[in-house]
Length: 102
Image (tube, rainbow, N blue to C red; front, side, top):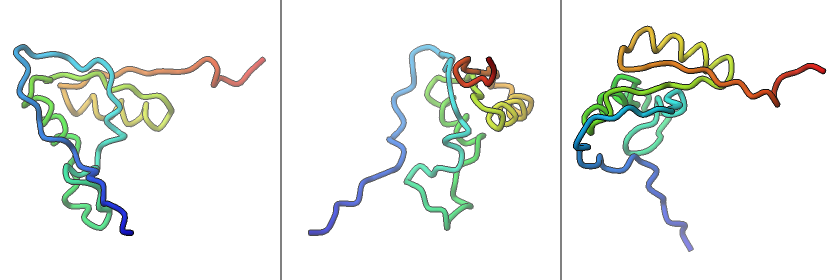
């Protein structure tokens, strides 16, 4: 029996919100590069960049976002993108349980 192929794409955009809102917790580094119709690593040119994700959000009433970095790589990425994209604010998360020490 053949397995059913699952759609891994983005859902259609919702109706725009009646008033703009701020998304107060995003991890955009985890979605940059994922296509709206699914992942195809061989088709890198079709993968949306950060600007495409920001435009998609703004089109439905989410013009600003807080991008959260949770490890050193994500913090560096967050620092770079908030300097480039005025729609983004940056935040850093560190877990005390992950800290080394006595």
